[in-house]
Length: 509
Image (tube, rainbow, N blue to C red; front, top):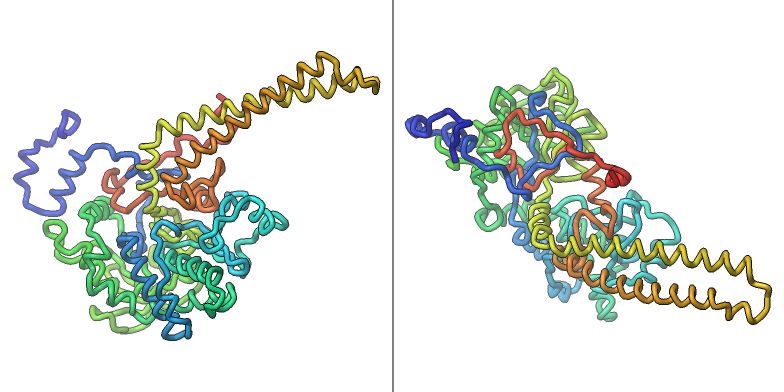
């Protein structure tokens, strides 16, 4: 609500002409602080007043699809493609789409046929062979004899939400091959390769995109705060850029759906962006020289240019060419994307651009954790009690060992020493208490984990450690948030501060 900190009279605002600017003004004055799940989180301090250019990815960044609807569509189309073009038996069409099975940050082992999750130390904490959960012994046999190299050809990292259907199909067909030996399916490695080829072709030949465009409302929700966020980011003359791998026809259709008419006076999405680059071929865009090709309003090529011009529409290009147009420092550019490798890691390794990672799953996870606050406090208390009990047992074992070394004369009577018997009994009691407490802790941890995801638990944690994905977010994203529209709640020159970049020993003071 309006308060004395804002001297602008709401009646004055109401008399202003209807426009996106007036709506943004009201939003800036009346919007309360964002709730936790809609905040922007900071890994590296970012002064927005130093950012002169903001670039955006489109798919899963500005275009925040309905994940289940789009993933299931891609799942079904890919299975059909495996049957039609790769001669897979029609029985594979019966594979079940499991919306909650696949997540970003998972790793597919194309040799063993497993889908696994590991922590930042590359310790595999969970793994499935098809639908079979691998116990500790099975995981140890596969993944404790030598270190895992996720970059090797054997493994495939799930970096983007577009890859979730692919992993789902792989797990389902592995399960089918386990349960129905007569079903003729290739090796796990060939299976992974065929699925990747099939799903890539569904994207590349426009099959998936045509289905999406035929029913945009089903697959792509409209967030009115998205346009407000972009309008607010553009205040003070900051330039906005759209840099996407999608073709012009698809980009134009999605952006018209997302922006046109959403705010008063916003008749065309083209007025939002100062530069539009389609068919960018990221991550190559950040690493290799490639000419920009000017396009007309139908998306047809006009000419190759060394440098683009503000207000233009282009295909291809490169970061290096874009920086020549900007004629400034890389740290004046903020790039916002959802792909940890194609958008964020590649940007970090190839430039000094600042980065914002969009993690749509963050919002649901934070809301779930909020509802689990009481259980999380119990879990913390249990871990502290376990550590204390374990420490007491360790001390008593050492005391007993030292006492025996000093007093044991090799006689049978030494074993019946009252001090030895009493200490051993105390150790046994503590061990039984510790075992019961561990079992209780596992039950509480299981409830928390299942509430987050029945297969994998938290996206950002594996056990007590950061997950492999969580560590990547921490290492490569300057800031991260659940959706681009969250920027609407922050001033255009907001100072995103690192409040506490804690090491473990920092928590003791």
